[in-house]
Amino acid sequence: MNIELQWDIPEASPGLEALLDRVAGACFEAEGIENAAFAIRVTDDAGIRTLNREMRGVDSATDVLSFPTARFPAGKTARDCPKRLRREYDPYLGAVNLGDCVINYDRARRQAEEYGHPLRRELAYLTAHSAFHLMGYDHMNEEEKTAMREMEEKALGKLGITREGIDCDALFAQACEAMQMAYCPYSKFQVGACILAEDGRTFTGCNFENASYGAAICAERCAAGNAIVHGARRFAAIAVVGSTAVAWPCGICRQVLREFSDPSLPVIVGAYGKGYTVRTLGELLPEGLSPEDLGVTV
Image (tube, rainbow, N blue to C red; front, side, top):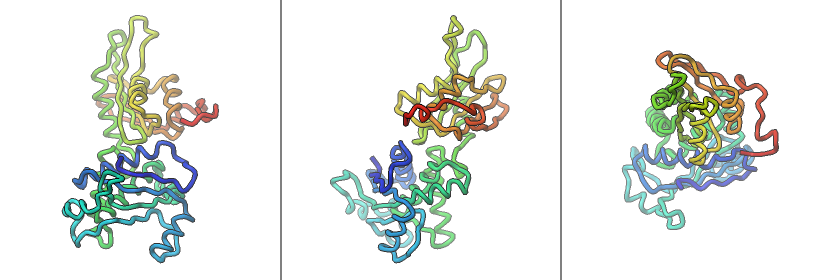
């Protein structure tokens, strides 16, 4: 594990630890360091205000606080100081302990609404921002700010997380690649799909037909099965492409997607070589039955 996650408030985002762990790993990879870890504490406005006042003498709530264990010389970051990093090795963690960060869940939710992107994207960004603080980056002037922002985007980009929240082009390209593997000797209509899980992993699928016709499986459910067998239980987006026409998900596929996502799920749909459009699952399935309707949390 790259992080240790602690909740000061009731856990409001199931599966968050897997996403933030992958974000931390992507940050370490972008920086070029190995065997590192840090702690993340998720709190609310009141909790972070208290910490900000006690630790920094600032009586206000902010979005994230970072407390590094190591200090690096001016102009240097973690990758430049391997000996300094080794002094922070923690036998309990089995890794170099970079320090602690505190994320304000209340502020993250408000900022996500303000910027118009998913809450998990905002939490991922705040984690990356803090990770690079712990590795010696800052934003006290424009030069520092630019360098830090480039590293954040590099790390998040490895997981398909952009400023807008989701790299639709990348997902659609993976769907197009998966489409080439379709088995469709009867309809001759190839379909490919790519699901982005909330932990940053992607899973592809294609349609495959059967002589009985009724046993055919859509690309969306093929991709969903691929995601499920690898432990993904929450979907952040799906891209679907048809070989000669736009391949909108069928009713069954829409209901399957609703099982593992909420109505805000972006559904990126297009035809091969002709671009795509984006709709939400709620638009495609206004009154879908959800696990929550039956008292189940996925």
